Image (cartoon, rainbow, N blue to C red; front, top):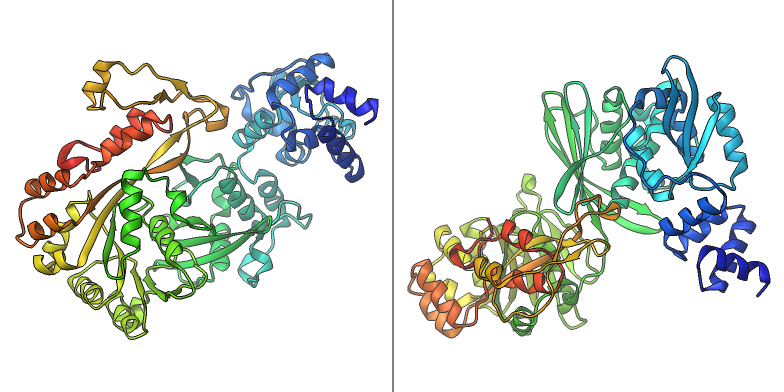
Length: 572
């Protein structure tokens, strides 16, 4: 290995000289930035490396990029097209707004002299250069200009296509930021979707307001406002039309709700998007649910052994009903697909009926509900039972007719999976009885109720050990002998200062044992059911959550926010 690469590795504080050589060589061959190549390969800690590089070059380092005090002036003198193309961040105007003397600009690549020259010529003001990390500059650009600002500026300059006449194609749904074609609404929408995926959002909401078009992402279960370009309201009809074209909806129909799907391709990775439009007084609102086409397995659910072991025994049964309960967005579909994937073998026929089909499983026959032509859960289920299935999955039991057919299927030798909307596992018993299901049929067919909720996971970069005293444990009914190290949320740049990144599921499983079966047939009160379940080893959801707290995965506050001690730990 040459002395050049060894010296370079020492300068950036990286012990892997081969990796440095690969990064620098690749950058040279492809005419890419060596700084980008080093950062992309995660060879060093970005903040430390960039700060040391700034010191060695005697360039002032910005550990933080503050909120702009003169955002209008910054955007005026340094437009989004220039800033985003060269990835530089205008920080401050020196002098009066009407007679600026200099502009302070932060960059992360001090060796890109061509970009620096282009920036100076474009801005027309003397520039004071500073250095900041690449991540901070990208975040600052998003805050100052909004997502897709460079494309939006080009559209307002009159270079917009007529999107109402664009025919959809598979290529149109490929997200590609390297597209050099003329700026368009197509690219603008793609930028929004890519940004949502980069932030690991599960939903995008495009919401028309009186004087604005609000875009929000749901990240880790929480809605966050996204910075968008000024005057984006002028683009409202074009954005909505583009989304409707991508999801093959009728762009002329603006008075009725519509549902559709988009199949996206991002860097070769498939992503399904469920689209729902609803008419509002300010125009059509569009909601997009982002569904990664992932592989499902029971191991990914992260269940504790005292829940996982009985679930695995239930999956080996040849008949009976297993019901998963919880509100919308609690991960029920992920659990269902994981169970089906575990059972999806060459000698097993699995048929599902869903509304809608969220993920496609190879080897599983999946039917989508179409109520407008009479294909309801009940009607589809009758047909399924004539199609020789071993395992049946019903998206949701909503009425007595569907429940009775499911019970009949389980009593005639089929293993049935479905969902219910109840607050807790034991509440599923009362829910079915309220529908009109006879208690003796329920006890003879249902094998288990599995309730679940999603809680936010602690950010691994900033979480801090928590001193949980005996008094704290007693206050929240955390077992004194439960071992582990609890942590608390702090907040950092990597988790948007929330202290959390990602989510995990917590569960409670009510298994219908022989004793419980005899009890259910008598239609007892919920208190009696809970007492028997606890004797059979039932672990309430809040108690399950304490295991995750002591493993350092989530916080006491998160568990308390989604559970309560009433009725054995049901969720609020």
